[in-house]
Image (tube, rainbow, N blue to C red):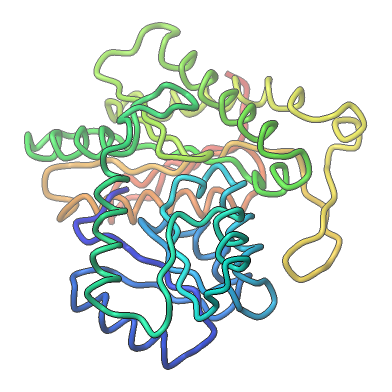
Length: 323
């Protein structure tokens, strides 16, 4: 979801520099996240989807070059503007930074006005990107946000559902981004079919980015649509894998700690909330509730949904079932 104040993720192992940069950015009206090593930088980017990133090239555990490369190869984060902030000004270092995926660079010691001007420029250009996802053709995050705010202004009651794939990163790491993009399009197709059989009235389907999708519908249709979406995706998901992995029912890859880990085949996790005129203060409150439901659903590692009905009611809890 978009925020009134853009979020900037800073990756640098110099704690003093991070503090100074954080003060500068907060003073300019930005939200700030910080990471002191490359692994943390990648994890925070994937979890929080910042609007822009400032990345030092020399960080422990995973240097800036590799962090940039991984984030550019991840469909969830590939679109984020990334600025290298570095003391290394040798042409070869800068060329390597751009080849790894950087959009721009700023040399330390940083001049505050110059950095803020570059940040504003990249955020402005990012905001002008097409309003539909080039991968799926569905309305993007900006149109989704406008639709939610429009319904909130009209004091409407509606359900907001957030769709996400479990263990998508492991799939992407093993099979590559082209197969990852195919998995995302497969989910988009499953969701299109979900809202067209029969044609649903007053439904809005959007592609937030990566493997994240959102759907707005009438509250009384939310649970049925979740069940249908799960049935469609679960029928398609096995074909995304090679035959040997499909037969095993899992894939194996090295995790961030260097350990060999087993990941089951991807499932569809759905988190949702019923919006009523007085329940949520704003879009961010609604987004937090939906995100919490989705995270709880993802912990089950199977296709399921969890929809918050209200503070005094238990959520709709959807284990897999036949539709």
